[in-house]
Length: 113
Length: 110
Image (cartoon, rainbow over all chains, first blue to last red; front, side):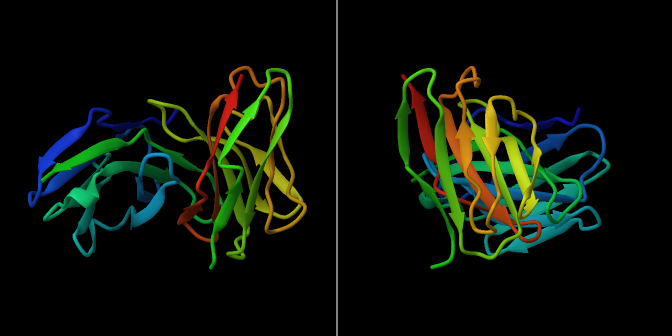
């Protein structure tokens, strides 16, 4: 069965530095890979989507890469701020549209002032 | 405001009782989903619906039931058959790849 691996340990980073989160998966590559942010006690919020034929996607201070050879996605937050502290979830979408999406357990990011 | 609402935010029930969690969306989305989230685990899919009057089991459907009589509504019933129902339940909707989540309902079985 498909597995998603995110670093389950918390990532602590100094304010202003670039945070890099990793999402690895097994077996076959998804058509799309998504990243979400989740704050404690709340529902996840969509951040970025990258397609299998795209290498990189950017949105403001966020950057996502997708390497289907390594079966890995990297999620970067540049010039990190304490407000970026949250849990970040990686999700694999194999069919797009209305099909089911598989989520990783997330990585908790703490940005230290 | 467009969005997804879930109610109640906190729910307590006695063991052996069925309970229904509400999920409503005004985003005009066709697809709706129910997930369960436990500490140290990712979101696990319980049921999803791609269109009114149709739904499919997810990865952990046992002990749960749903209905989709209206496009806007996708209630989840946690039955007494669910062995370990205490969890954080999240509802989502989608019209393309992006999923919009509600605020969640934290269910505690006493």
